[in-house]
Amino acid sequence: MISPLALEAVRRIDKLFKIERAINGQSPERRRAVRQELSAPLVANLEA
Image (cartoon, helix red, strand yellow):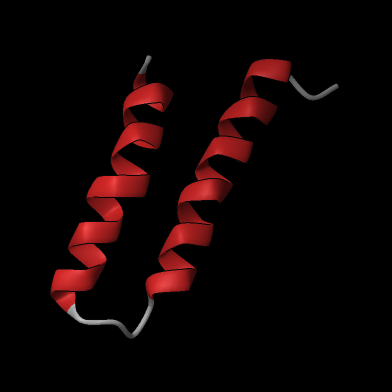
């Protein structure tokens, strides 16, 4: 049986990977801006 907590963590991590795939190949400045806007809140929420 899959732990609900583990499943939720994997779903959240998948969102981070989706963001990374979307910004792949863009300038470092653009990647940083997107990470600060979209990824940082997800990481903060994941840590909680």
